[in-house]
Image (cartoon, rainbow, N blue to C red; front, side):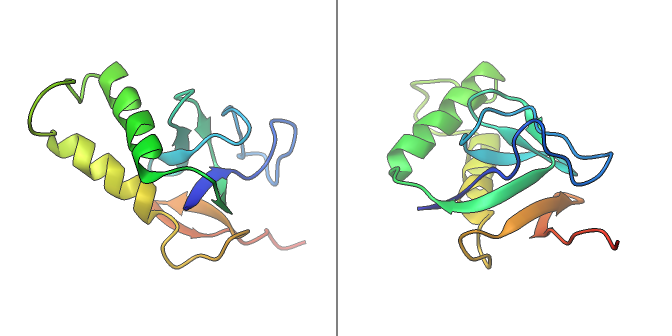
Length: 120
């Protein structure tokens, strides 16, 4: 399954405005207009890498529900999921659409786009 993980480790920065406070290899979703958030750590990163992970949709969905439960957007046992839950699931599963494995992406106004290195 194609998902987004942090592109750089915590010591690597492309520019002065880059950061990565997420855990290595953790699945990312949209956290803010210009940053991803880790669904386990709830910490932010400015760049993600499209990766083929050996996880099932159910495993990823459980992680998303755990994140949303901690943030108060999801109540376990409720027959119908909230709008926020469905929106977040769509984000995680749709972020890689149109990108090949290995592509480094960033967010611009909440939309994923291919990372381009700044001019030298």
